[in-house]
Image 1 (tube, rainbow, N blue to C red):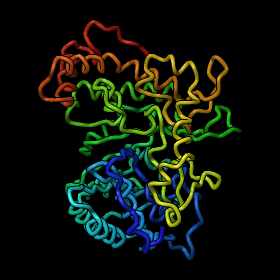
Image 2 (image 1 turned 90 degrees about the vertical axis):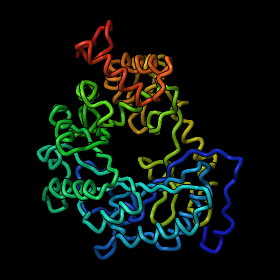
Image 3 (image 1 turned 180 degrees about the vertical axis):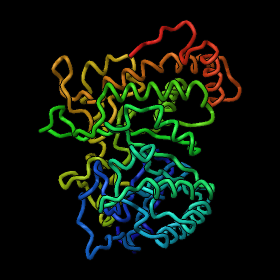
Length: 421
């Protein structure tokens, strides 16, 4: 949709639409050469060494269209890459100005940005704090683990720069979620990884399992990929440490996702929802794709210069993409006792055959089942606390159940049998 047509974008007050668009202002351009990057090469390479950036007309179009498409009181913008800070600080200043100009009365706009952190300085810190951004910062634990796979293109390590970025964000009071990729090197050291994050004062942590499919490899995945068994063990170990003393102090996303089932709440992460498709991508040229992990020429569904964002989100192709997640779930998954916590996870990882010969089993299935079974008694205790009418809400129910577990001398619920690795 061209800028002169923006006035035709209007919110439908009777429609409910749940989505989070990943906007790529610099496309796949990045200043790092991380070994496990899945987005590198997804679009045309930079010209003359400078990244191709989203132009101002398209920036205004995505802002106006996303406001029009959003049906919640809070309108959320997610800036991704590649490395989105390559767009420059002035780009985001213009974005905030446009958001304020087009924001309807009574609505709230929130911004999130995912970054490797190496370009951050105090100017960035001040701006992000003033504009109330939430940041996802990539950090894979201590330097020895982080620098093995996250380096500059010339091979130099990046840990010191990323950690400096985190300290800048913390100093300016910017809400920051640590995004830790769990790979073959750090997965066997859960206490070291989690302990490091505690030592730097991380309050929000997301653990992201590395799965790189390689048909020619012995395990069907890259050597850097975490195995299902080790992934499950990693989560169990961190969960037990978190449960013993960090409830209410540190938020670990996958633990919160598991606990959501205690309150009958829908998962906030698309990978654990029964149906996906709510996290599409808009590239720097306006091209629309169904998912960050499915940016391929044959899956391009349109361009927001020609078709509105709302129409692309509501299109039969996008809806079919999302529904396929539930429709292709193997029978063994549908009968799984922890299905509500997992729902088959991300379709990109569902490339194994089940024991019954059905396609579509998740590569990490055994690990997720191990972990979710391990934390299930705690989740059931949280649900019990909630049903008893805990007046302080879900957070208090979590802490109350955690205290009961700690008093038992075990990170599990009293009277329950602990499952051993």
